Amino acid sequence: MLTWKEVINFSVKGNPNPDKRVEKIEADWKAQLTPEQFRITRLKGTERPHSGALCRIHEAGKYNCICCNTPLFDSTIKFESGTGWPSFTQPIKENAIKYQRDTAFGMVRVEVMCNTCDAHLGHVFPDGPEPSGLRYCINSESMQLEKELKDGKEKNE
Image (cartoon, rainbow, N blue to C red; front, side, top):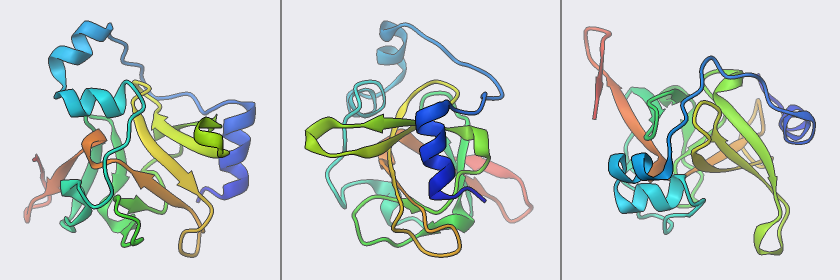
């Protein structure tokens, strides 16, 4: 289980190696994504609080990167933070997420990105529930839910 100390370590000393890398030119990302998905994932934007469709969804499954379909978070670690964005306590795998110090807007935060394709996802904070104490605050537009079906298989939505 990742801790805040490990998150800070990754943001300062370097991130774990991803299982694979996906790199595309800007025109290819624009062709693949909606304008809002492109603005958020490739230009480091943020959706308005409480506007994302995934805020209100609590179905079983995996939350995958909208850009490269890498699994990022599992529904079992999603929680209601009251912030207006989907919130999670841990990534699905330690190397699924990339961490970077973010000093934009006069604040010091830790930005989280897909470690496979560098898509901006949101930020992580040390004010989440136990046992990790982490709150990954993620834009809905940066993910898609791969629902778990009753027979144990998965279906992308």
